[in-house]
Length: 57
Ligand SMILES: [Zn+2]
Image (cartoon, rainbow, N blue to C red; front, side):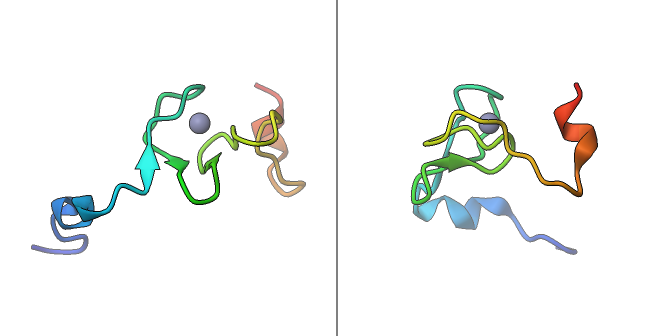
């Protein structure tokens, strides 16, 4: 395979669960935070000052 080889290999440890807010499997169990929308401990949306477009949507 080229590039990313079968993601199935990563399924050994369940590190990411489905996010309640964005529905993607990006909720990190260790950080308790969604990597996509930032949902987790803080109920704020993930935002960076260099990513202003994320805020206004
Ligand atoms: Zn999310």
